[in-house]
Each structure stands twice: as C-alpha cells, then as structure tokens.
Image (cartoon, rainbow, N blue to C red; front, side, top):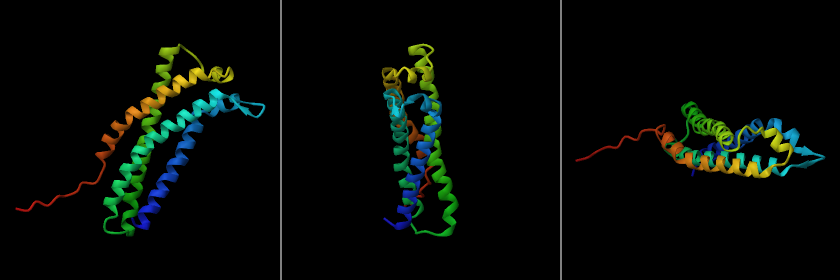
Length: 169
C-alpha cells in the first residue's frame, strides 16, 4: 500500500470522526445543558449520545470500505497533481452521503418515536433521566442505520469509477 493512499485514507477517517462528532453535537446541543447537573452527566444523555455516535460510525464504516476500493482504482498508476480534484470530490461524496442519509434517518426516528410513545419532548425526558426511552429510541436509530447500510453501499457503488474490460478473442 502506497503512502499517498494511506495518507488520504487517514485524512478521510479523521474527517469522518470530526464530522461525526459535530453532527452528534448538533443533534444534542440543547440537551447537553439539561443533562449535566452538578458536574454529573445523566445516564439518558449518555445512552442517547452513544447511540447517535454508534449509528453514525456504522454508516461511515460501510462508506470507508467503498472509498478504499475507489482509492485503489484511482491511485493504481501513482500520484499526480491532476488527481487532487477527483479525489476531493470522491471523498466529499463518500463522506457526505452517509451523513445526509443518517440525518434523514434521525428525523424519521423522531417521527417513529412520536408514533410509539406519543408527543414526548426529548428535553423533558433528559431532565427526568428517562434512560429507558432513550434506550428504545437509540435501538431504533442503530438498527435502522444498520439496515440502511446495505442500501447505502448499493447507492455508493454507482459512483465507483468504471473499469473498461478488454475482451480478446
């Protein structure tokens, strides 16, 4: 494995971790202040944050394997300066699409939770430390992200480079 491939893959993984943490922070921004009381974090907030991070990481894991295959194909002849733009767009696609799909699934989980539990506000559930609610909601989020993993891989395969196969008689 070449050093250019390793460095690009490492950069992709670092960006994925940064975007996952930013997205989890965005989804739990208002809850964070209600969850921390006297320097102690609620169990419900911990369960909800960990289920969000696990679900995002499952989505990104599938895209990382596919991105590795695209890197193998793109860097088969070595590194040159003309590959910077195609690799940047490919990296943005293989990192952005799983995150967008996760955001859509996150809001679908909120709708499903309203159907199952009724109109409950997450802020009130965090304040009352109702960790059972967040375990069920986190399980729905994680299992849905796991199920959508195959669909995500099928969609991302369409963006792989086309390999021309020579046919000889």
